[in-house]
Image (cartoon, rainbow, N blue to C red; front, side, top):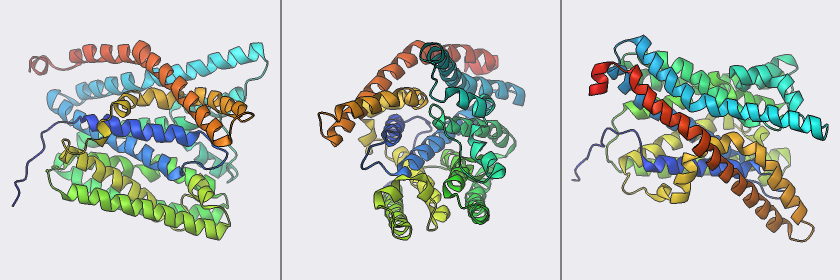
Amino acid sequence: MSTVTPIKNISYFKSFDGIRGFCCLLILILHYRFSTYNMPAYIAYFGLHSFFIMSSFLITKTLLKDMERTESMWQCLKVYCFKRFARTFPLYFFYLFLLVLIYLLLHFTIKKDFGLMEEFKQFGAMLLTFTYNYRETVQYFVDKKFTLITIFTPHLWSMSFEEQFYVVFFFFLFFTPKKFLKPIGICLLILIPILRVIAYLHMTRNTSDHELVTLILSRNALFQIDTFFYGILLAVIKIERKKYWLYLTAIVGFLLVFLMFYTAHLTAVNKQVHLYEALREDKYYYLNYGYAYLDILANSFCFVLFGAVIAYPDKITIFNNKVLVKLGVLTYNLYIFQFLFLPFGLIFGNALKRKLPVHLSEFIGLCVYLVILYYFSKLTFNKFEKPILDWKDQYIVRLYPKKSKQA
């Protein structure tokens, strides 16, 4: 019989940065539209779910420690809010500021803003108040059709989604006895998917726009809050060095891939579209009962994968790749600024098609886009984000009680 070795009480693993970098790279490639084959939309859903679950896991670990180190709810709340604001607000609002500058530059030079002013008019208030993930929900009540088109801000819904979770996250963890975290979390992992099924069946009776329904279910916090509870459970359960984490990762991963292709195959047959299109487009994601199991499988795969990494950090080293780890450190910057540089890659790729084969031209365009984005993200990280994070780490000690500082 093998000896079970408990895992040390730590909340950071190098592989986490690698996983984050890998998922971010997949999302960046996904958003680069090729003229032939494009990556499946399922990749984006898995990637974002991995971000949310990992974020929830790490914040839960940190907050539970801060609850022990601080002396009151108010003191703990100040520490929590300061950490979250310093981490997410500066870069987010810096990007919005850049968009305003770009609008002014375009308006006063070429008299064309490529829809920026329309985006500000339609979504400005939602972007500033972190309610941008409800734009499809609002559209459902307005005319039940998806007519909201954005160029520079389509990805920022996830920032609103996370900030809303942060608001309820603190109070849930602070006021819920630790012994109830697991049973409440398990109940929500059961109830929220049921709520998604009910919402899907209700909305599809009232609208034929399946893309609108899909985006509502995937972006509305009410229907996706279970994603974060996977991270909470991962933080509060005892993860031991047992092989079932590896077996579960392989089994759930196989089920996710198999059902992804099976669901897309049924859609391709029923809708008379190519399998590539059925895999790629958001509007096909929840068809053929995908609404009942695909999100559950994506969350479950992230959960067991992270569990396996925590249980076997010395064996699962594939994500320790230096390039992936570097991308993981820059993930927030890469994700925020991606749509600023995506047009450059597309334009460059299209220009090359006059002399080079289509596939080669688009691949070069993708590489140009990724390289420009990487170096801009590295610049903003080193010159803007990192100084703020360093200042946060220095200032945060003042918010803890003196005994905790000495400890």
